[in-house]
Image (cartoon, rainbow, N blue to C red; front, side, top):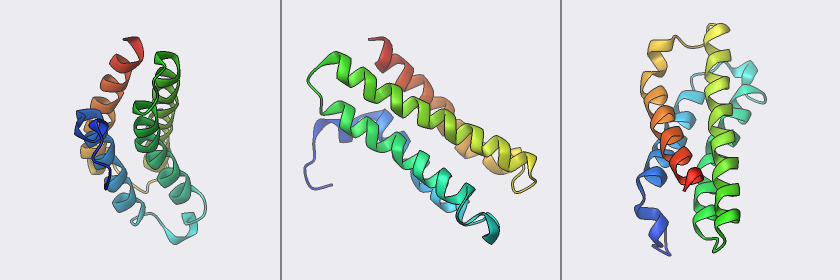
Length: 117
């Protein structure tokens, strides 16, 4: 926000930020009984995606950068899995999560490319 570092201009960073904001918005629609379970885990995982991209970009070592991007991708898979469970529980329909699904796929592809190179 204040530092305006190079990673803030990356598409993967912008996508992950959109996903975090959308996850927070969608988590508000979950039942109150999930406040300390699915809601918290969804928010934590979504934020982890974004934060690990930022931290990975700050690392000078390629190995360290890749590790942070791998953690970010793992959190992304966690978000995808949480949405699968929420659909199975009847909290969302797959069509309700279309925007999130598109962001998940795009972010996964971008992170995978960052990990390989």
